[in-house]
Amino acid sequence: MMKFTKFASLLCLMASYSITHCNAQTPQNLAAPSCGELVTVATHDNSTTRYAYRAPTLADPSSAPITLLLLVGGSGYIDLDDKACPRALKGNALIRMMPIFSAMGFATALVDAPSDYHGVDGLGGFRIKPEHAQDLGKLINELHTRTHGAVWLIGTSRGTISAANTASRFTGSATGSATGSSTADGLVLTSALMLGQNNARISWAAQTVFDLPLEEIRVPLLVIGHVKDGCPRSPANLMGNILAQSKSAHPKMLTVTGGSGDHGAACEGYSAHGYIGQEEEVASAIARFIRGEDYFIKK
Image: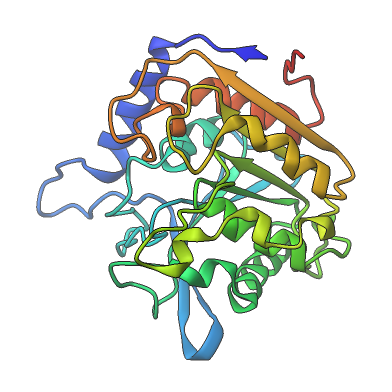
C-alpha cells in the first residue's frame, strides 16, 4: 500500500500551466499561447486524428526523450484547438498531470478522438475495435520515428480500454527505433474500467479491459488504482486480475490511498478516481516505474 501526501507546490504548478498555456489573456497584437505542436495523422476510413505534442521542459540533450502517449477517459473527445490546447475534458487526470510530466523530462502526446468520432458519445464503442488500435499504432510509429526514443501508452478510466486494446494487438519489439514501430515500449493503466454497466442504454457501456486479449500484452505494465475510488466501474481490488491475465515482462500494481477527497462525480476527474490532490505523487510514481526506479510499492 502506498500513501501519498499533498503538495501545495502542485497547485502553483497547475495554476501556472493553466494561465500560461491555455487561458492567458494577451493583447490583440500578440498570438495566443500554444499548448504544444498540433499534429494531424491520417487514420481509418479517410478520417484524421490530431494530437498535441509537447517537448519536455527540461530535456537531457544526451538522450532521446521518453514520450507518453496520453489517452483520456470519458468520450475521449478533447476538442483540441489550433494551438493544441484541449477545450473539453480539461479536468481529466492525465491532462492535469501533463505539466508535471513535462517538468520531469518527458515528452507528451495528448490524443484527441478521430474526426469521425466528435459526437456526444465520442469514441464510444470504437475504443475496443481493431481499427482504433491501428490508428494509435500509427501515432506510436510516428513518435518513435520523430524522437528516436521510447513511447509509453498511458490510459485513464475509459482510456484504459484504448490503451489495452493497442498494447494487446501490437506485441513486437519497440525499443524506440529510428525506423519506427507500432508497438509501445510500456503500458500504464490508471483507474482501469474493470466492471461493465450492463443495464446501460448503450451496449458499449458494458465494455471493460477484460474484453480485450490481455494475455497478449508483453510490455512492462503498471496498473494504478485508488482504494477510495467511488466509481463502480474501477474497483481497485480487481487490479490484480489484469496482472494475472497479462503476459507482461514486468507487471506491477500500485494501490493509492489518501488524497483530498472527492470534489466532483465519482467517475470523473475531480475525485479519487482522478487522483485529485495527488497528481504530483501519482505522476512521480509513473515516472519512476518507467525509468526502472523504486516507486515505493508496499504490500
